[in-house]
Length: 170
Image 1 (cartoon, one colour):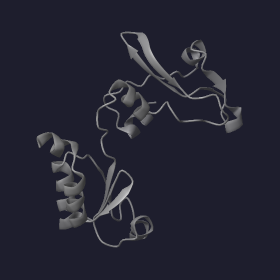
Image 2: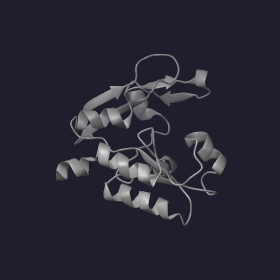
Image 3: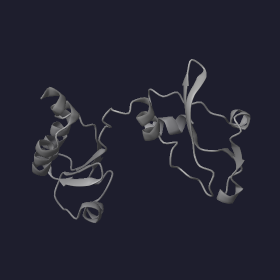
């Protein structure tokens, strides 16, 4: 559980393990997952608890396999605050010492868009960049599944799409 929390970079979330399944069993959500190569496991769900009282639960539908439709963070966040703009999912493929990469990262920071950076020959190779972006230049920026392109492309994208920070300042 601790490793999962670290991997998710979830500093502001409390992870509560249920190692022997007592809590899940008490909730009626302990199920056999032998068909997936596991033993007894908790059925997937998310739960909003306030002052020890369950306010809302999103329980996955009873269907074969390991469904993951409604117990995700986005569903819960939508319930908690339906009108808030979701943060962008952004990734920058960069190369060490690249001034265009530095420019793109600066534009993303200025726009208030958090991003993950993948560094050439550390996190990926040229082959990966060609396979993913059909590109050989740096940086290559992806936002919400869209291949934006290099730093000039990002500048145009930011002017066209705008960000929540830019719209609220207008």
